[in-house]
Image 1: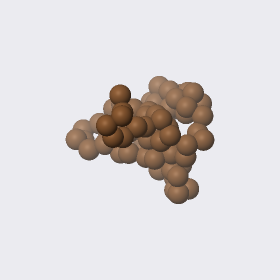
Image 2 (image 1 turned 90 degrees about the horizontal axis):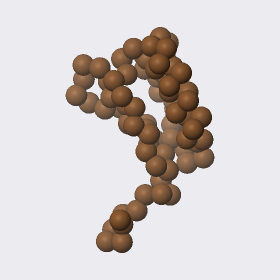
Image 3 (image 1 turned 30 degrees about the vertical axis):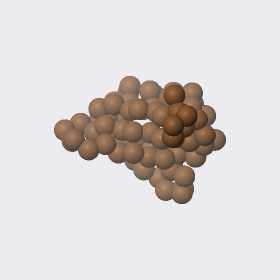
Length: 78
């Protein structure tokens, strides 16, 4: 599952590729709790086990994508 995070005062996005078995609803709830409180750090662990963190106050937006198995590429993709 891909997560894209926009950072305040930056034109670049942070993209983190999470394991496919991550619970989407739990992830969204975690993001809402941390970013909604506007304090602390948002920590995510990517597929390789690396932890990525950024200050909640610097998060402009978060886009949670579909798991890799749901993506379709090619002529048959809708």
